[in-house]
Image (cartoon, rainbow over all chains, first blue to last red):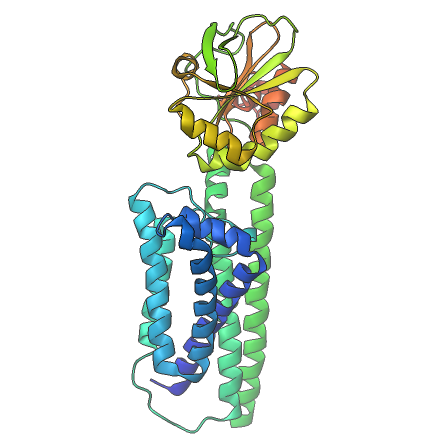
Length: 176
Length: 206
């Protein structure tokens, strides 16, 4: 694998986790309520766990930039954990709860598509662990990494928005 | 040659980023359109006493005082909003501020009655936690059965004569407001309003 591919992947994942943590930090009350709604932890530890999740997201975002292999493993583990948390609640029939993915502005109920998305993201993190063929990096590589990470982040935001709008689209279709 | 490819690569990245940003902006605008277009009305379930019928009289236990009768003409001529909820339903909890503001704003002609059933202690704790002491709170399984309440939160609007004027599943503040709108306009539900030929979206259908 060319080093640029791995770098782009790590930069994009770091950006994803950073944005996720910032959303949660901007409205910690809502995130605590969302985490409580998942009903995976005893009520007493939810506030502490909410703080821990935000801390872990920030730590992994940093690790992805400085410690490639452990950062990618931790990111894959975290994303897979989210997928399991959503899947468990889907299995319990608690489909109405908010995902808590995109902050309070982009509320969306949990769904199978969100499980698939997180599994894909975890798989992408694992793919980043493939051995790298080293080569000297030049300035164009910096352009590629920065621009590709920014483009991926924008596309991700677009897809996220489309997933969040899917129920509304269904209602409009039902009206016609 | 290499120089030309490098320039071309840089220009392409600029264009790709601009395109991605444009697509994101478009999708966000679509989201706003969905919000505007989608009907925001309480979903009416056809079971239970129909709109326009007199609701059967049901004697219900109250949480705080003596049993009271719901349905039938009221001595003070006010309307009644029966709001069916449960302490374990998260959407009900989210709607409580809206219910509170309705009770406050429309208090002159409307009494809001919270209705539920189940063990008393759970409801007492719920009332205390959510500060619902100012509301009439009744516990009655027959009341829910009479109005065929399947999903929560559910609301039934009775006028002063005890006639059902609007009812439906209420998931948002807009749904709740739509019940009053339905009462004012004399239609049973938003669905019925849209079904009338003069209001049909996209012209007449066969």
